[in-house]
Length: 138
Image 1 (spheres, helix red, strand yellow):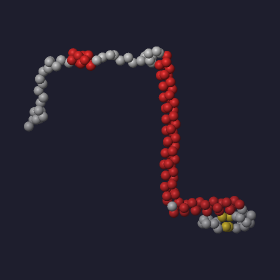
Image 2 (cartoon, helix red, strand yellow):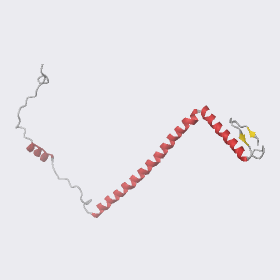
Image 3 (cartoon, helix red, strand yellow):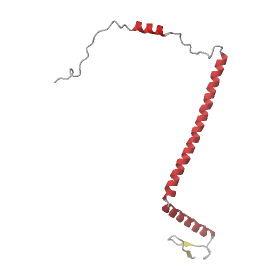
Image 4 (cartoon, helix red, strand yellow):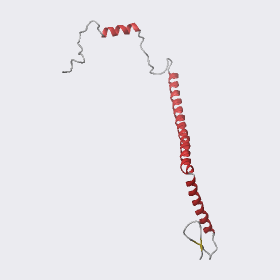
């Protein structure tokens, strides 16, 4: 058994009496890929911290937009269903929707007379309002 030195500090053993196997080659490539990725992250902090943050923000906004559009579609369908119900109720009655609101016919003069009957402007009494200095002693 012989040892093969790689970029790491610990020696690796090879199988088959000095001939490196496919597993050893894969492990060596894997170790070098990890090492280069770590160096890449140290040299370029934007790739390590900034790019994931920006991508999370962009994809989060796109996802939220998609979810909101779905809720708007559901609200539109609900509104359309309610509108169809109202239209069918109008169609069932000749004068408009069933249990429609019928306001009373009241003029402004009638309202004025009703308010004047409730409030008597001739019946009042004087009440003295204390000055700000009267309540204090001293």
